[in-house]
Amino acid sequence: MLSKQKEGRIVLAIDAMGGDHAPNAVIEAANLVLEDKSCKDVYFKIFGKKDKIIPLLKKFPKLINSSKLVHADQVVSNDEIPSSAIRNCKKSSMQMAINAVKSQDAHAVVSAGNTGALMAMSTITLRTLPQIHRPAIITFLPSEKGRVAVLDLGANVESDANNLYQFAIMGEVFVKILEKKEKPSIGLLNIGSEEIKGPDSVKLAYSLLKNSTVPINFVGYVEGNDVASGEIDVVVTDGFTGNILLKSISGYAKVYVHFMKKAFTSSLLSKLHYLFSKPSLNKLSKSLDSRMYNGAMLIGLNGVVVKSHGSMDSVGIANAIKTAYNLSKNNINEQICEEIIQSDHLE
Image 1: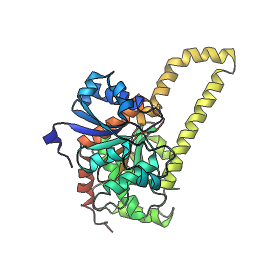
Image 2: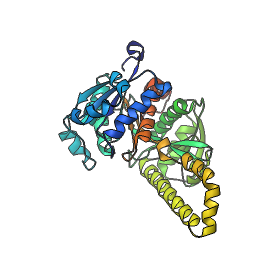
Image 3: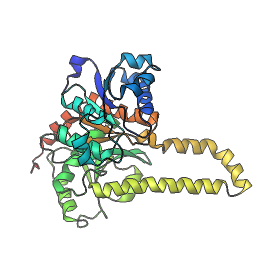
Image 4: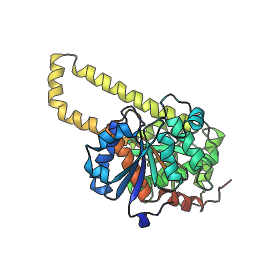
């Protein structure tokens, strides 16, 4: 991997054309990160259409001096199927940004573009880390005590016991870096806390984690309600279940907002109550703001790849970029390799 000491900076490859509000929101996000004092050594390689990006860069002189713009002829559309993107979008901003990580010209890539295409292109271009069988999608979700990391959120429809075991180790390193926790707790998602419950793959994963030679803080099975409690730092599951969990939480958040609005507009008295409650409600809204949790890593690849949700504005994309910065700064892949090599479960 590109040497941070030699470069003296963290170089991030940015797909400027990915997302619903690209390239405007992406360029604005890069500038927000540049203004953050905690990211003072960041440098951007921005990939996209020059005619659209140059006018935006002129608004941010500091960003011009801390970035290099590389023209890309193609853009991966949101409806492009992964196999087609691999074949037909080799000169796209997404693929070129991934290539920068492959060639060690950048420490990480960030894109708000097509998730399936990003996963497929990244996996083929970068491959997985040594002894990691499959990559997974990991991000944080809000909990009663802050946030909880969950993986896999959709990279793999099916996962065997060894996959789940490796997800747990990778998730632990992810939380160590971003949450500054020395021994994050790890739970395996199941339909109950008893050892006899669950499919064979989950029960075998439980045994592997319980008897792991890697010094992890495995607490056993957790259920769906434990995800929100904040008692667990990392929740491990297969991509099929994880994706349903993610979208269910998102859906019920919208239901909650719907009923809150309905309750506060049902009568004149309720509207008055809203005025008195507004400061507390604004605080609640901020704690549940999806922009603050934006930035999912395609963990397990031989390079740092961070996906921003496509609908995010500049604040949300900036948080995804900061995630990529922190993961690169702290050598997440080197730490994963150091932990996985300690394991005697490398089938």
